[in-house]
Image (cartoon, rainbow over all chains, first blue to last red; front, side, top):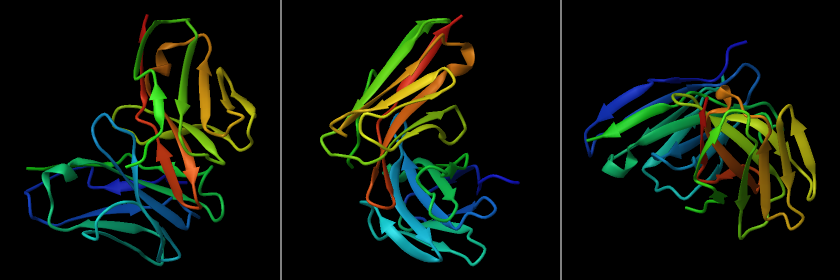
Amino acid sequence: ETGVTQSPTHLIKTRGQQVTLRCSSQSGHNTVSWYQQALGQGPQFIFQYYREEENGRGNFPPRFSGLQFPNYSSELNVNALELDDSALYLCASSPPDRWDTEAFFGQGTRLTVV
Amino acid sequence: GQQLNQSPQSMFIQEGEDVSMNCTSSSIFNTWLWYKQEPGEGPVLLIALYKAGELTSNGRLTAQFGITRKDSFLNISASIPSDVGIYFCAGLQGAQKLVFGQGTRLTINP
């Protein structure tokens, strides 16, 4: 059984560009959540996807958007990148109805905006 | 954004010592979780707490859910080198959102 995998592991982008981050959920997990973790801080909830629909959103602007596909994998898209978007982006997947106690995190994508 | 207040921010201890860290919030949470994060990895769930006053153990780790539902603590007994990492508390808000503390960085001197 494979765990949650994220790609790429590291990425450098220029301010104003757009970026797409990818997450493959663990087998059998239909819920995917995305978090932003700035250096020295705890993760901040961005949004959650369940059955291909957004199922809750944190305090992030509309330029942060996402998708979930029929195989439950997910993408996080960020438009018009700003320097403050530099962070570790974490994806967590969980099985039906057990997302709070069985949310498994990927290793994250380290995004640097210059 | 909203975060839980976690203390201490860092700890430097000797191997074999016991560790205690805590987490407080101005809001009530119905579920508290404790995670550990190591460099280059995502957080790993250690303990989940569901009831006010609940005391739960996982090996050398013990955590309690405060009676007011606004606080929790995590204890680690007889620390070993592999306990090094950053420990996060998290509260479940609504049906989807985990609110995290800023973390306690644990360093162990052999």
